[in-house]
Length: 283
Image (cartoon, rainbow, N blue to C red; front, side, top):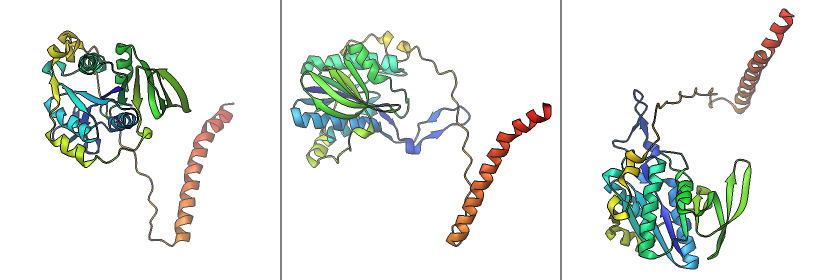
């Protein structure tokens, strides 16, 4: 069973800063990491390979520095890794990204045979669209299970998984080949085995450009991206809550806490009653 895992290198969101004059993300000096959900996608693929055999083949689109993310994927247990890197891929929205990844996956099929499963993370922390997995399923003509929290069964013909919905979980069965988008609930990412870590240090991912994968440059990168960012906004900072001194005796702290709650509820009640009182006056 061949499993392709599509990953993305993203800025470490714990260090993200925003240019308040432009609203743009400041990337300079911010370390790059594998998108967190993608780590769980790799882990899930490795677990399936351990049970059924086959290969875990990781792919990403990005600049040459994204090779470090692929080396990390190798340390996590992936068999091979492929970098789609070309200046013509730059500035891609999700439509152009899935077009390029689709051609990368077809190139992998030329080397390794049929791809049975494609895993992605649920969504990337920088774009936050969650569109790449469904877009790949559409282009490949594969079944799709999104927001996977648990893979219950895998056979050569089908995959059975649980996925998260707005109001709970749903068990769903899909024919293979299939695309699954994996959430962080699906597993715990294990520490990398020493042998895989040593292999990753020496590993050099294959790098493919548009010509090698047979992609039309007019459909990649900014040329193939109809999405335009019109404006970005920074949410206003939330006001801090009231702090009750922690150096008071427990009884006094509790009294102040209750007093604050009653005061807040009284304000809400007054806000609710004001229109009613005005209505009575006008009536």
